[in-house]
Length: 177
Image (cartoon, helix red, strand yellow):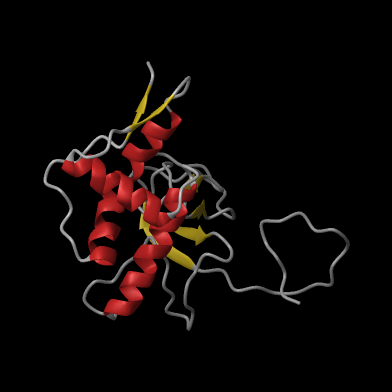
């Protein structure tokens, strides 16, 4: 049985060792060890991992650090891993790139309680004017989460669908404020 990191254990477990996928990224702002960050070294959603929890200092802006990717998120491993947030356009096969893009969009859509195809359909509808944006009442969460992940969404959308992202990005989520 493989250890399940990131979950409370039901009982005492035997000692073990694990592999952890890591990526060296540059901090965009001051970060404490263990902070949740995205693949750009920013504490913004969608989070893909944490700042090296073994550091005994803060990571200052522009410093490089090890990003520990969340358990069970790496989509392939042979000491040269793949992850939905890190696409290699020139070296990755088209099928692999599409799988990575689909995984990323599925995860992002999950924040809004949608499937990847529902989010894609809604975003396309907002882009061509056939669908209104979704309004979240009493909160700015969905709107803020969309804006934080919007650039990555359209990047992955293009890889997955083969369609160009709209020049003018549509409003997909709004708040009632």
